[in-house]
Length: 568
Ligand code: LYS
Image 1: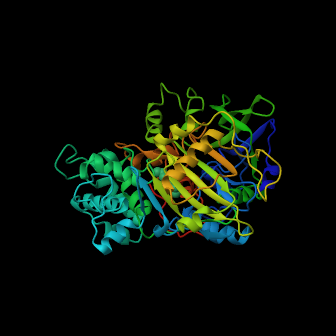
Image 2: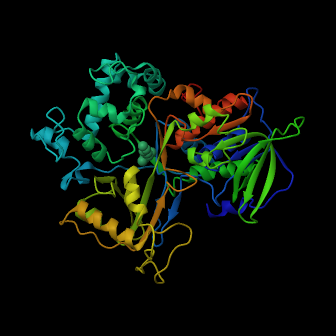
Image 3: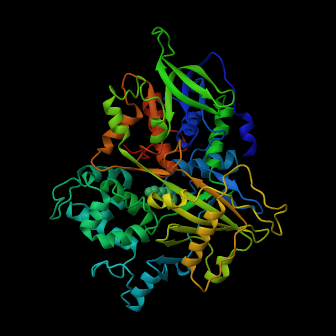
């Protein structure tokens, strides 16, 4: 992985003329490059195009970033960390295409055992199995939330499912039927369009996509029950007031589902993207890092086949330079798009009202992670946890008991995975003295920082450890960590760790619109942000695959089932 960056170009290249300029070397940009170079048209022929991928940072991978902390051979994920086996593009690439080509090793992403995971909500500490156990013993387990008689004793996952089933039923649909259909996602998309909210009250007769998920949850339960759902669910992003119709399959297909299989790649999830990059380079593509797109214009020479001129800022030479291209694929999230020149022909804020309106159809969701390294996996003996997570309403929100180096005891702990409003809590601590890596029996030298990722501040580590101790309670002693890493995906150019559709917008219209906002222009937009699997690599891949089929006439790759549903 270290060496792939040696094959990136960072310099200004004069008189560059391209068939396709892809901007952004994250999941959707790399996938687009890979498919354009590797794919075949309907007649089985390669496209033979000149393609460059431009990237403003010095690395590829976007919001996937696997790092190695000192003193352990366990890889830490500071960004996206897993996939679901129901997601066929990412799964086939990892387990089929690249498993042979690059010897990728897909491994389970274990969620551990709820008998050994904790909840700490409103100062009440209990094991995650408490709800299911109470059912066996007949106890009507009461949390510190007045969720009401109807929902008391139910876990947040159960309540989500109960509410979603009920709304579907009243609208004339059945969750079972959707989930048992050959393509639940295709079926959901039909339902999302037509489902009406048929309950008495302020939302009666509205389409579900017109209301927010918070609106719906509160209406179906109470504000107090909503608080329970938001906090016990681990992610604030899942319960903000986003598009209720989009939220329904999102919740039952993943977070509130009991049959999800998560996996990752041994040695780091970002290898899925470095493999795409490597294949693209091997097939003659170029990746130009440290080049930031500033703007793009139409070629004043209207007879030229190179319809567009892109202006890049080269971070090394600190100069602007120009590239001619026939097509542009903007593979970037909302914030990155909005950082581009908003006065050019494409974005023009006075003239391109539809695009400007539609770009705002998604909410950018702040999120950050704090990783800690420990000399011992303290959670194993005291808590009995092998993997998986504990959840709290404290600003750390979710922690994950990650791997232990098989050769020694140094262990990785995701001490905070949090999103939306809690990110501000940590942001304020992201300054001052850094937490220095300490000498251990395996880490030599003293007080040093590793250069290739950001460390947490001393203050942040002290605060997060305090919360971790609070969550685990007095009977579990949590030692001091020896090293840390911190990543806030809210910062530019990302604007957030992931995205969510706003209510009211007709997602089935926006998705195809965003892929090619102006019919007469070959400027495409791809990425997770405007996908129907937001917060997942698969979302980015599906949108890019759509562009490959619709705009480049590529045939379905032989490793993917022709019927696999790519979404709207
Ligand atoms: N895919 C992400 C995860 O597994 C979830 C993002 C949640 C966004 N609402 O944690």
